[in-house]
Image 1: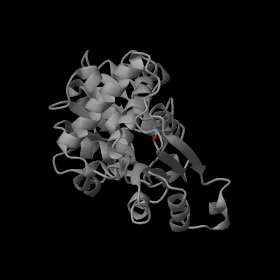
Image 2: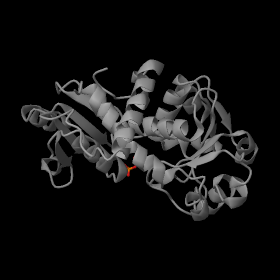
Image 3: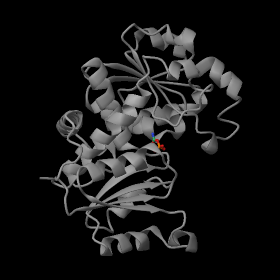
Image 4: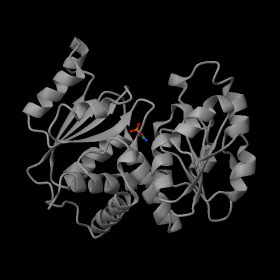
Length: 305
Ligand code: CP
């Protein structure tokens, strides 16, 4: 594939190739091979119109470990504040010879538009409430490395599904790879049309306590208060009581089950601090795996040697 705009761009064989390549990248890093020459002479542009900590830093680390030249572009402080359009920004990057553009944007579909204007590969680093495919890949990688498989794995994705690009990409990728996904949350945050649009094979539950004992993975989503209307979200206290993962709830999980969160977290709302910091939590591991997975994506898209 040339671009990674959506998890739907990936069939099972391609997704598995990315995960296997990421495992090779991680093994090399573990053997103290800090830098590979694979993308020497290639240019990767990180084009971030929305805030990010993990994704921006890990794409930068991934490109640098592959010896690519990296240009970091943040909309804040650029000519975007003078009204420059995405298209004109894209043409400027094109003139500078970008081989890959990694884009985060508040508008759903921005990576698809960008791919029409640049010759290089486009990687979606999160577009509005639409998708975040490399997050789904690093989540799948983390599940596979902790639990040994994805096929048949029971994954509960919990919380603000309505606004979550992470949930959307995870449903697409995990169902492609044979996992059994249940979306859990209040009805206002998982309307049935949203669930149906994500995947026909995905189940929906409004009762977290009944789903936990039969889950291998519980993935807590950030409550996106910045995108919330009062009608969706009655109160933080009520939300936390019904859908927050605290210690008593975590004990309902099977012994082997893991707790995930893409970050950033609202500690004390969707996840209790002692759960986030427990040995069952893969949150820090997810961030570390993100570098290997993004190395694999850049390497495979750019035909690294
Ligand atoms: N998970 C994630 O996308 O985090 P950032 O917003 O910090 O990149």
